[in-house]
Image (tube, rainbow, N blue to C red):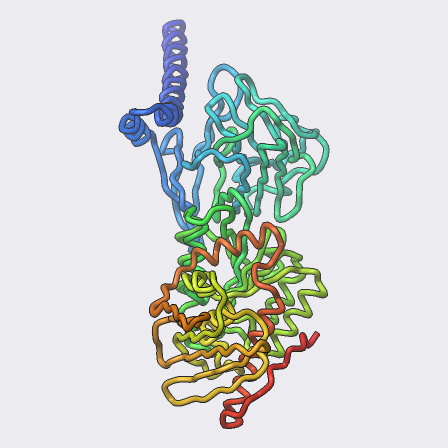
Length: 532
């Protein structure tokens, strides 16, 4: 009877192993066959059907393929979506390599940054990168063990048809000091050079640096070799990483949507600082709404201090709707030594604009500021020489802003300078309850006029050419995508597409206009000095 029990137990054990192996094989066939068939003409429908057959979850703005749905759970913690890996599983019989991970449904990356807040519930967790198929991928193993204590922990590992092989040093401290607490982890991989680096809480981990030249592109994933873990605030960035300061303007949603959905390639918004100005209704009523949307829809991580984003970004966008806060934000952001885009208006006064330029210059930080209207179809109006121009647009004001026309009139001012360039020397401004009209004489004799209407109006422009030719655009559309492309190129190159001198002159122009208005419309000379 004992022998019969033993035989029956062994038979059940073998059956369970076979079932486990069968599930693994079927899962990875589904996971990879769809991708393979999709590369063959005429197989699109079958690829879609196979992809739908696999277990999937959706979180962090991505769909993820998983081996078994019951091993995973999506929840929230303190308002943040959390992905729980509930069940740790031993590798299958054969070459010892992990399979318990969620694979992001994205195109293969040749260069990628994966960031997440991660909580090891036992000793370890991992980030997969360069995934080609179940037998060809790499992963970074974050552990509470050191590599010298446990050589298959706390390192970079390579899977290429057989068992996983360590490709990083054994030396150095453990990635995690303790289990069951949150850490911010980051993995940066460049398939061209083969370099990969793992970081914890902004610090590179010695044992988590490796080089592999056999895999040049692939997908990414999150999981554990054989334990359990939690993940939240996950971002996958194929290019530059951008941070936002001030989430109280619709621009943060428009810009992030363009970048993080791939409409504009080359960068993603990964982190933000909320900011906000309680005394300004436009800020107070929108900051929480837009922050929630950035976090929940786009997976943007939030920090409590501007300096906390320095190590996680390649460039910073100062977006606060209240331009009075821009100078203070620049002073903090300049310490990150990353390119700065400062959304319109650059500042709330000429003095602040010049101080921003001085602070940035002292820190050797490149910056630029622009309205999206600069990159609108009015660009076509400057293809031929312009002898003069009239532009118009909305002109609401905000009582807390020292420079009245900077609040919304900045758009029309940018349009005027886009068409005529620098060189405005003398300004007059006349005003009524419904509108402001500003005219400037350029040093070469050309005249430019800007009209802003209240409460709102369309944008438009007329240019004057030689031989009495006139060309007009009476309804210029607003599109943020061209500006966002300029921002990405700027962060990549460090070269401002609009000179700092032109931006400062625009503020000198607005300042002179305000002085003219206060004097009853007298002509005022534009102060062309940099002021720093």
